[in-house]
Amino acid sequence: MRTALLLLLLLAIAAVPGSLVPQRSSDPNGVVQYFADNPDLAPVLDSFQMFDVYTSVWFSAIYLLLFVSLIGCIIPRTKHHLEALRARPPKTPARLSRLSAYTERELDGGADDAADAAADAETAIASASTELKKAGYRVERYDQRGVPSVSAERGYLRETGNLVFHTALVGVLVTVAIGGGFGFSGQRVIVEGQSFVNTLAAYDSFNPGRFFDDGRLTPYRLTLDELDAVYETENTDALGQPIDFTAHVTIDGPDGSAERDVKVNEPLYEYGTDVYLLGNGYAPTITVRDPDGEVIFTDSVPFLPQDANLTSIGVIKVPDGLDEQIGMVGFFYPTQSTLSTGAYTSTYPDLVFPVLTLNVYSGDLGIDDGTPRSVYQLDTSGMEQLTGGQTGVDSVELMPGESTELPNGLGTVEFATATPDAAGDDFSQSVPRFASFDVHHDPSQVWVLVFALLILGGLLLSLFVPRRRMWVKAVTRPDGRVVLEYAGLARGDDPGLERAVEEFADRHAGPRPRSDDPVVE
Image 1: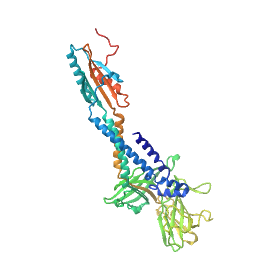
Image 2: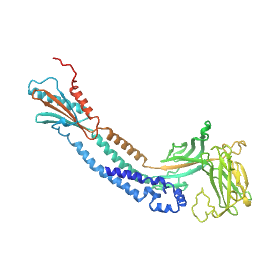
Image 3: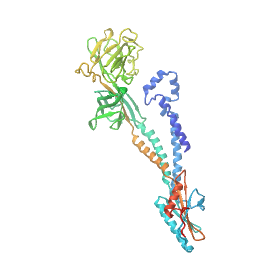
């Protein structure tokens, strides 16, 4: 058992690196970024499988050793416990007075002869046996050299709970190791009004279990109808703090169509998958036209929030339709304000005075050679900056519904508004929002819950059910008096044992006479 505890502690320590560095299974983009930021350290960590901690050789070895150790602990203890359940309670010790939990009572009156004394002793032991059975003890009568006694034992549930605890722990290990292999998790960003179909190609990132089969994906469509955000407006000390986010979605699947709400920590469960709302932000609708006015690009582009007031950064890539490829790095301010340095910032997360600025680049986007590129990053190594920065040309600055010329006669760019008919100063619905969802399927969850409840139940039994042995012996003294001896023994620490022996003696033979009781002659 000590070995299993040490291995469990070692497993917990071995899991720590997985929270310190990004993991390929859950954050592949983070791993790529870590290699870019730490070109010397990352290969060293990779050689020790630090980016694949939970599937590494050393983590798996600890996991398997813990499993084997638990099995090696459970089997012999189960065998011993079954033998104890079939065994008779042990014989009554010859000298009960040596036990720490000991007391005695004298039967009222005295027998006229030895036969009456023996009958009184037998009657007392029979009643003690009955009382012990009612208290949940297994009892066995013994007669040692004419001295009748009863031996009783209870608390087998303590060891049963202990075995249930360790067996359920093994069940959790097996369930997580095998059951998790049939699950998956995937992430998808959806803009208001857009849909996501539950197919492998539709995910932004996808992490399957080792036994996952994409044929098991249930075909359904998730449409983000609207994302409601509620911010603090009354308390000036917490102005702009988020109070609630609600994604109103429509699910279309084999069972028909249904409208649902998804909140933070209140996932949607449909077709065997849990859909969690992870984050949200704004997705400005950008339209690019060529010099002839033809639309060559239009899309609502998710901008990633950078602070609590949703100052956001996004990237627009236009690979076709113009004389040369262009890219734009955008900065979106829901409620634009100017700092003393002249830089822009957002002072409130909702749309009060939205402003979009764009730094425009032209050249090679680096996507024609098939190299995977992040949609949230722009590789400017092969591009020329046309606006913003050190170019001497101001960044393109737009509000919803406005458009302007691109440099070098490349065309025009428009920041489209979602509410063209709204009042001129009403921007509250002018920019669509996006929501980031995590779709999770884990068939082992139910079994993990079952085993977790068994672990809890087994632990409670092993902690609060005392394992006790109790003996009652009727000793006939030479003068004919019958003295009942009561004693108890606990397996392990049992602070209530002495009290239990005294209470049983009081209940069976009456309370012990006090030294200050009056003597009646």
